[in-house]
Length: 343
Image (tube, rainbow, N blue to C red):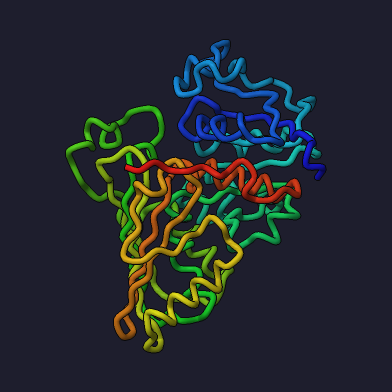
């Protein structure tokens, strides 16, 4: 792609947290031109009226989604909609428009598993979607027309475990203890997800039933041999942004910390947005950025890998833009040098 060319972008679902982050990033992306942003309940309102952090930065207004999508003039459509909506809208777009979906509508290959976790029938166009975990699927993303953006928990977990699976080092059960901020539950408050209910509390949810479990298992099997049991448990953090995952595994051989670090450094040598840290990552270091910070620790055959991401950026909108960059032949870092704050 010519570095000076613009990608005409339509965003479906711009009023939620994921849509807000897409707007925050794309409004300042040198190759992005937003031609449509939908939000039915906010139709007619300026983007800056709904997302106060963008007040005065754009003249864009939210619109209702067109009844006839066949005439949409765009190069790329982002779907930042609740589960179950993109699956019906995506087939109605012109064939020349590339798609990146931030929901779970196209992540799962197996129709029976997809129905079990999402209560939806698999779409006929599922096979056209490439799983968009950039760091493990970069070459396929580059040539894809349709991307299923990974889930936030899946991103943090997969980036933590993929180097071990790729080297076929895991021999025993894998346990993932993952914690997330309240923004992961979306903009509309509900019992147990509304921040006032969470801010002074801590609890687990969805034991053995979280929808990201089959996504994680599916992706790990594509990275290497992964036939072991995965115990995946999610918890509610009393913060608004961030995911912290502690991943425990047993290796098939003893390995030193230095050797383990070398494996991760080699695996992510071409991945700018994965940073290897000492000690423990901290969600404060990655908030508002597209980075995933990872730390590894080992004792004999027992290993623990910590990973931290911003659930709305690397776990959603940032990774989506990273994939967009690759799909259009741009440097994947374009528009994504987002620096966190300290403190």
